[in-house]
Image (cartoon, rainbow, N blue to C red; front, top):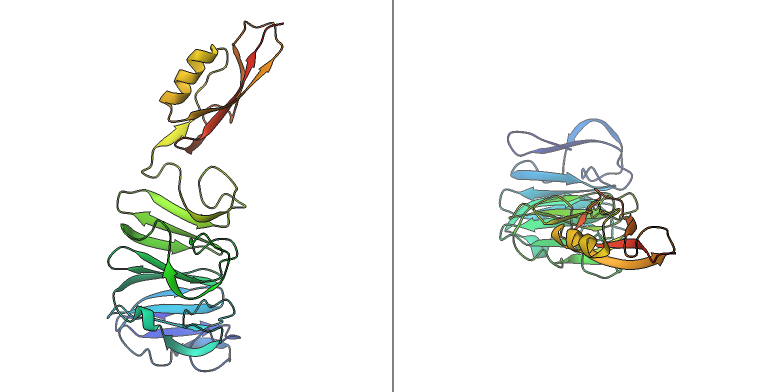
Length: 259
């Protein structure tokens, strides 16, 4: 979909689920107008097989596939023309669309999401699809921008830090793990304090603990191993030195217990 200088939406491409919004299921190789959107469109977002816009008045309209409720109209009915969301008739600043979910940023700085929640991408701590816009945990204020991936969602906060939720099998949440999240977690290195694992090999356990604390980390498990090194000398640390993690992450140690 493209938006011209007059705020008109024009579309082309695949249209199996009405995602072009022209009232049909016919694929288009040339741009055609979106039904009912001949003016007043401020922003657009295209999901897997659905599309949403924000009008200049701050209202949201969506169309296309709706299997998981990603259109936010309270149904699972596919729409071939734009449908209005009664809960978002005004006050919306931006919209972001994932594969089968959608989120809106309200001008007051809070976020609402709806649709597929199979990976926690709605950020409400649940697993159920949501057919209507609903609140997102930790994103009730202070949000300045949003973005949606296939099955994850991120928000830029006023303080410069970033929060993300959802699928994380490839590290797309940026929290230093590959663990999926159902509520938002901070992205390492964006405004929030970071735990950078210090180099502690060869140090005494006491000095290693102090270095870990200074690095915004916590000491995790401490395993003792028979060794020729002095008692309480650090033999290994995990994760490896230099790894950047969220503040408060735990660093495991292996120390000598002597022969």
